Figure 1 (tube, helix red, strand yellow):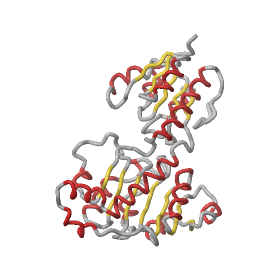
Figure 2 (figure 1 turned 90 degrees about the vertical axis):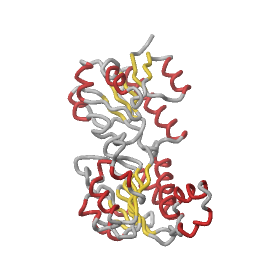
Figure 3 (figure 1 turned 30 degrees about the vertical axis):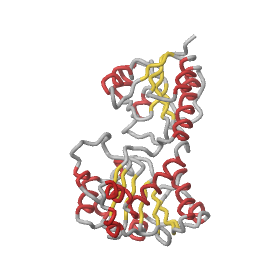
Figure 4 (figure 1 turned 180 degrees about the horizontal axis):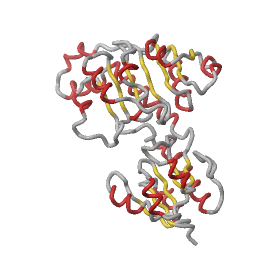
Length: 320
């Protein structure tokens, strides 16, 4: 007997098979079929979401049918799920803490190396038969440099461990963790302004909230060194993209790497795309086989748990 109807994205076949033996599944890619996603989201008992958005309108149109929105990743913010509406409608919202921490931390170092060793442009040069241009790509070592981590949760902690292996110094800004957690990892716990002014690389790993929205704006960017880089693999809305464009265009910081944008997908004519000192990836932080498996299976188990009348293991917020 089916436990209900569940909207899912395109997940691993073995997971779809496992779910299909318990619920009726509706598979929709929200990027490819946004209209279909919007119409189906209000006609199901549960949603398993990697990228798809669930809004107040979806919840209202559900008329009490929707019981759970299970996120496969860590971040749960208004760009993905309307948490206030979920509480108002008594809908569980869950996430998967730690499921993507390794993958995101590794991607950050992929970006760091691409930035300081110019690997993307150098690859293009070789393919264009310009091997002799190698001296254009004089790089910078990570060893001996200072990395500033904004947000010291699962991802920030794993990043700190990797930074030590690269022989980097560590500054951390996170007002919600004890200083002892940072010093135990060989770092220094500082305020945001001191981190921005003292880091060669600034990397963001905090959630998008009212407190952190556009937390990195013109004033904050002006504190960074001209030789510094900004990396954002958290949420696009944390960085004011207009301000970032200005400082990159004027070469007031050396460069940036962005895995996330305030609006995803971003418009094709976004001004940041015209700059040669910023690199992009399309929100790939959690897109590894290992992280996807952890997140997708964990979210699916949460949905089944709730549809069986149980409480979820990883609720983002309590229900009234």
